[in-house]
Length: 408
Image 1: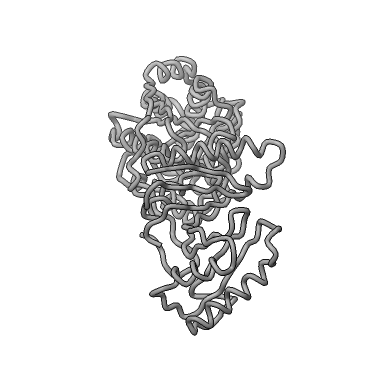
Image 2: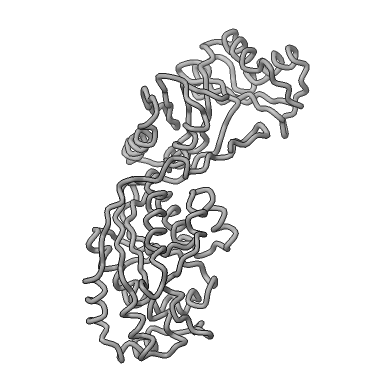
């Protein structure tokens, strides 16, 4: 279906909520309206366990799907048409919709949410399946059909669709509190941000740089990544913090094997201060267990010891392939893979420590003026308000499921 005036999306996890379900649905509706604001939107309605989007004029389904892909809390996204209130009207609508198609096999699937309708879902499937088979000669395949004719029966009658794409799932942004994400400019941390937004969190960001010893391109990358992530949550703040004086002090006075861990401890201290400024209740990092030397269990604990804030690590059990797949789906991968000089790559030791302790790192820091370095970095920090989101073309169109095709 190329152009649509109605789209239905399921609400997945929200339907399992209890007393606060209405609040979740209200936030979800608001987020849908914001995502579709540049389209001819007529109404967003909330029948049970789904969202119905009505457009005042036809719009390509791929463009509606692209925007709804950024609204966490939505499940499957279907391009629907109203197919009347009885079987005769449904037959007529199905006949029109199937004109010109030639699938190798088909099946009819029906969901009946209005239990007042006199036929059960299996009865409807059998009746309309026989209609399609007799009219087309197509073989039925209930296991893996080439084409699926989907129907929903609710209080408004029959809804029909052939085209369906996966929604992002999760919970609506805004129901899960606020956190501050340490954003490096690489692949991992934007994916961590995406996954925490998927759990309903709203994020601000902190980016550390080593300019002029490293390329300032990392700052531009961080801004571009926040603009892409802005499509999922809206406006965000980005704190840009110089780390070079801290790194120079660590390089001059501390054990080379512990450099990256000491850098990371300062990063967490500074990010926690920014989080308090942003009224956030947690920090988010892109760490994955064992991916690099600083991300062993021992090192993670030794670094985290400098803050009392909760540190969320949504990538902790994911491998690189899984992380890359999410980055592509989120639209951050191409930006993350642009070349830049990461601050943690500045004077990285040849043999970094893989097992440290908080006491060992604290002892190394005794040779540093930690408070002075901390305040110096804060004094050089700049907070930018990123209000302009990336173009919609930066967000991938979700792959269509069910009929052997994929939107590009």
